[in-house]
Length: 220
Ligand code: CTP
Image (cartoon, rainbow, N blue to C red; front, side, top):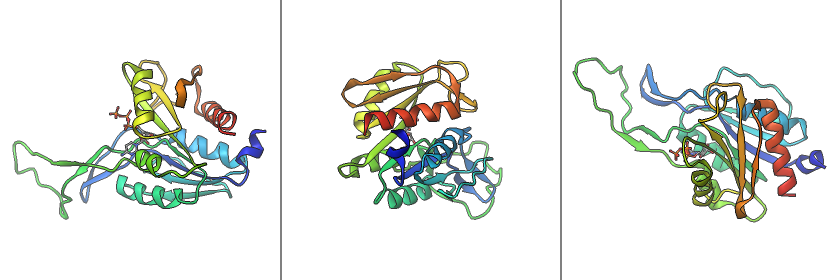
């Protein structure tokens, strides 16, 4: 039974974009709305899970007695909370669109437009999904997301292995209405040992139900 499977399980979910600060008024970010992660959090909390939602800046609100919400801005802040909370968690679902890079230097004062060409050095952020995948203990499950434009299954499968995840939820940018900025999504779930499950275009609440059902059926 799906409800029994998630009852009292601690689940860490990352959601939304991260903002990487340049100066007091500017940042590098992306268009992620956080809807997928928030839908997963609500679905799992309704099934009795103890949900820890680590969210970048979004316009969404969430209020559920079984959801602890951590509002963060940067990838480094998201990393610290996810790593800490995953230690005694059962499942991690990393749906955030984490900025791969952050500015090397933060300017305490607003950058002035003195230069014709402004160069900003970026340094790589730690990969939260890969960190959890590589540190997971027996019994812990780590689920990641992938956004691909070509060789989708092949690239997502490579990501599954490289980050030592148990499942990757693949969004294809080739599907109209799927992924970023939309309230619908079309996913394929890739598990270890070449197991692949394809789903149709649905709203993100229905997609969350499919992901949760797939986890409970395959990791029970
Ligand atoms: N992720 C993460 N920490 C990062 C970068 C990504 O946890 N610093 C997670 C995302 O939350 C998502 C998955 O890794 O679960 C996406 O992997 P990523 O390698 O960023 O894939 P894409 O965004 O598809 O990009 P690319 O193909 O450029 O690697």
